[in-house]
Length: 176
Image (tube, rainbow, N blue to C red; front, side):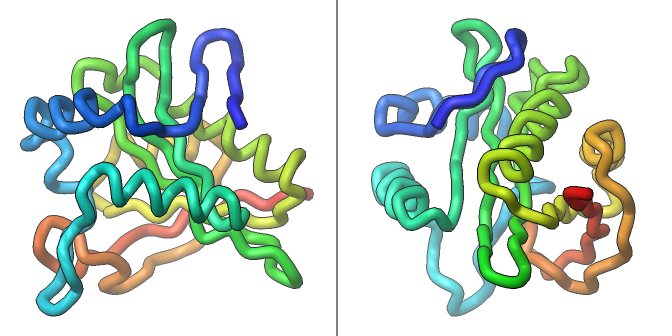
């Protein structure tokens, strides 16, 4: 599955992205660390890249998630995922994303969220999509609001981020 609006292109992550992924996480460590998941005591460790991609591919085949590289022309500018896809009576999912620092504040992530939201509503026929954001992450809050998500409320100690259980704000879009 690939999506494009003519400016931003979303394509599945693959094994050939390994060098880029490693380099981006090294060069953008300070930029990404405050927002990326961490693993609480006893929670295991992050998988290596190949295992991560293998798990993403398996989840994709089962319809549980879609994990995509955000492209602008030939440049990889970030990553976006539609995760926790549930059908049945809830028909819901969540979106998570990050952007390489040098591509921040250029509208690429908002375009990517728009594309993935529309795909979720129009193609997957989901009803509800969430984006959960740390309250300190004002740029990400702006992305969610520009993409038409509304603040629903606070999720206390929602995810383990940067070594602590962190509160998040829940932004929601529904298909009406």
